[in-house]
Length: 111
Image (cartoon, rainbow, N blue to C red; front, side):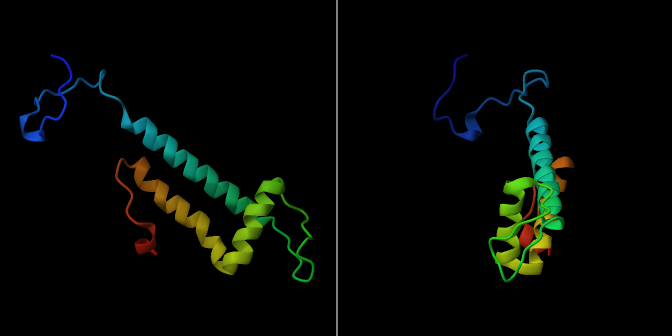
């Protein structure tokens, strides 16, 4: 049978798709979790290697993650101060449920 447009959920067929023909949401969740963990590691290393001079805002030196990492870490450090160290932790806590196959909850309520 062809595609049925505008069919209410109560009248849809209840056939189950075989696992081979059903699209895998697990891959997308794994890819999303990997992206969050990578961003967390990038931000953590960028924050760890950031060296700012409070008297000269144009000074940057010793940054392990290059200019992009220094820009992100500088924006986080200047914008949030010491709380910038919680951003990688928040990214990790948002990605962990995806690895477990669960839907992530709001991150703000966890802290």
